[in-house]
Image (cartoon, rainbow, N blue to C red):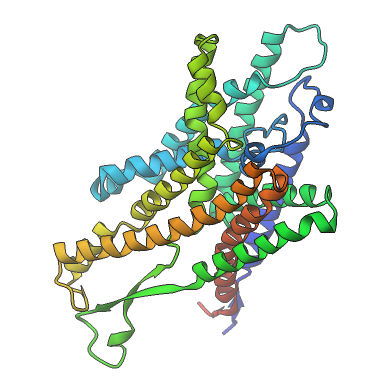
Length: 399
């Protein structure tokens, strides 16, 4: 018999590299008639740098200006709706139908983000009037968002990491661009913070909390090896990345209101405060991170459904009655982990943004530690996925 080995890891890595190559090319296509010279000397603040992690480029003036933001925002909204409707409703929705809902919602969100962004674009002199140029730019940005959606979807099926490699490219681009501007002396303090935050996230990603489970079908030496596993940070740094999208939603609403009521001083004041360069904006952003850490954990890990499944198969948590007691126990356990991990995430992000607000270091350097934290949070699951495909390739199939 002939042994056949797979090359799944190689195929997936090559596909992901292809997706990233297309993404990098799209980032180089400027929106029609936009003036890049108007952005070259613009100083990036904390908010712009955070947005650029999930946007297509630092200044958001290319075909992929909106980046992955509309895709992840639409995905998160669909997740929340599905979680609220329950497991039975999710079972009746096909993946194809879910994909169509996500795409339609993503286009609507992309159009809204493009409309809010277009007023800030600077165009060259042209025979076309400004409104026509803005309409073309909106159309280009929405098309770019659809292309990114398709690329992320294809990478999820055929590549590695779904949308995270695209976010990784943005982070590395920001990191290298920022470091090149400063001397080693200016970089020393932020790099120390980077190291501390990276170590903390690495520890949190690799500490596993075991909840022992007694399975009715196992009554031997392996009975005590059954457990439900929770990471110390149940869903990693997802809340930090996705909080940017949620932070933009109230900004978007206020901007639309300012279009209708441009002389309203209250709206203008709120809009100025809803920024990561103000203490109010930073406080709201950290609150969103804490809230999303709890929300996403309960949506993705579903302790209620976990308890229900245990009861159906007759298994139980050691020392806890099945049913309501198990559901309460799992929810309490997950909530405590969320509060702990959320507090750590907010503390570390607060240190970075606090240094920026105090003016002790520049906005760009203040976000280096936060960038390192997100980078480690992305690389850990990517490494695990690569490792799993590598193990798969080590097996020889003879059928």
